[in-house]
Length: 338
Ligand code: PEP
Ligand code: MN
Image (cartoon, rainbow, N blue to C red; front, top):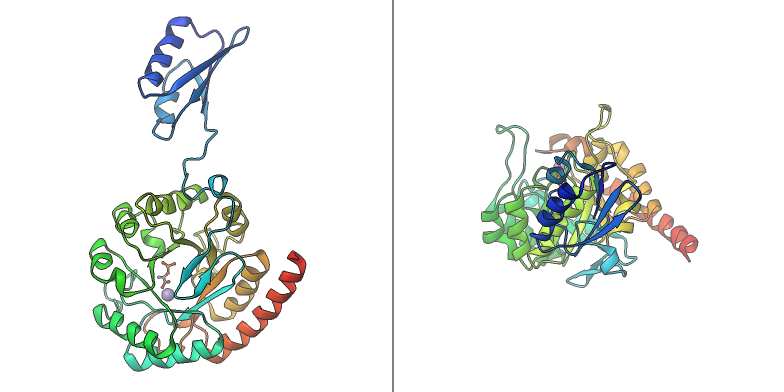
């Protein structure tokens, strides 16, 4: 971190700031020009409050050099992280296909969809047992029963299961009964929840918050990793913009940016990004073409009567056709990438 002082700052002020920084266990290297002084801060500056330093009238600006995320940072872990779940891999050149309904509605519904998506090429089964609905009057999910249904579907299909958990209590109770815990967009900065999944051994699918910057997204992963759970997968699911024709705006730049900054895998959720069934395939193609590590797609056998997100759910046969096309695209991509 660098502190640049205003022209002509006197020795007394410089001394006070130096003392203040050194009190926090940080070494200060002083560079003096003809009129301007610069402090180089050496040590762990992650706890330094930049805003507070800039409150000092003598300070022109404070610049961060190091990034605040460490465990998630590619600088300290150059190779791609590969998350291995029951033999299914996420990251490191594998294109993972996660599919299933938005919500688990009944045993029959979930089993039917689970078998169909497996047939269609899915590697993981998704389904919501606890649903974060905008309205308290909307279907909230089957809860514990939903987890039991997922376990049955895993037995039947052999596919690992992913479900969202919304509270520390749910993680404590059900965290080790699923293969991946999903942290939803609305909870990306629920720090108590992030700490709880950090303590868990179950891998985490971390969805980007509705208005989260890349740094906030990376810091949310850092929270989980700092707790000891290093198996984190990012999920770009669209962000809020001024555009209202689509549910959200898929930020495709998130893939190359996050991959550059972090070694963790990143998948795309075309369903919640677009919010409309006919947008799912083009956005999934974009995911494959831009080098995402996979997609998570909502699939329903009867979208018209789905209890949640039917409008953006693909029929199993449409999903299967899309996966075939994505596989062609993946082959082309591997030729380009060599
Ligand atoms: C979901 O995956 O079902 C979901 C609710 O997603 P998000 O948290 O991205 O809105
Ligand atoms: Mn949904």
